[in-house]
Image 1: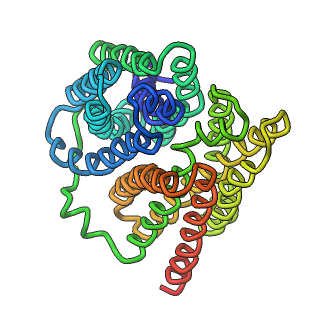
Image 2 (image 1 turned 135 degrees about the vertical axis):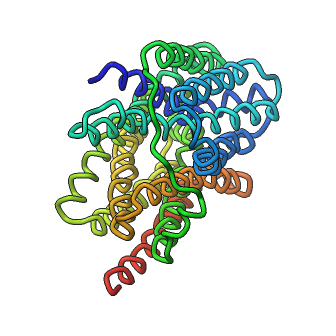
Length: 384
């Protein structure tokens, strides 16, 4: 791998870590801040919504600014935001630092993809882009469990220190090793919206609803798993989920090519709904070795359809408007983060009115709704 691209991968890796590690730290944050687990869960909502809104807006506002300068500044702001997250004394201030980190991440990630394409040869651009995105998944597989382990072994604040340190290292790497790069002209938001149609909007709704269901459970996975198993340090379970997610990306891409995007997406949504609901069923078990084994199996399995649906969904979206693939994919990313934010919000609502044991069932219902909606979308697209 080009060492310059590797520097950018470190950046997306630590952004993925920061994005996903919060789920493993929620019990500690809620205890330290003296708030409910549902209130602490809204930190995920704040980060995700800020990213979803910030990505298209800041991408347009900064399109004429130097690429390398933006990479350095956005990662520097991201590092500072996480350093501040480690020292704030109130939940309100932590909300502000999480939003700041999300906005910086929303600027850095698409720029890292653009920079990797500039640094790679024409024949290697596709691989370079996939490597940048793999950094986020590796953040889920390795970074989030490492951060969770740090938070459990010491204090949740040290997890943000870990993120801040790696972010500062990325700033130095980008400053020293990346060359100045020219940017291609990008579309304005108005120009991007011209390519939209009803089928694209409905497919984005499938993305939002399905992701909402998945992250209703993932956001509160720490209290869910602890309640089933009596295991407080869930870093191993997060790693199992990450392995399943990494495998799911590969499987989803393979089946998208073999049997088509629509069939792959339907199978993924159906399997995802069942596995999410399984967490509620497992809550009926008494804490035991058997419960730990069953949770471990579900933990590694649910990442496969959960992440396997992403390549299929994006492939289906591109087929709806192949001439504006970049625009469609940028809004798909915004839809993804909107779903992440809504998942934390809706999951917190379920906990407030019932208990954490019902989050899995609620998640499964949301994903089934996404499946039904996509079935209608696919039929309409086939007729058209």
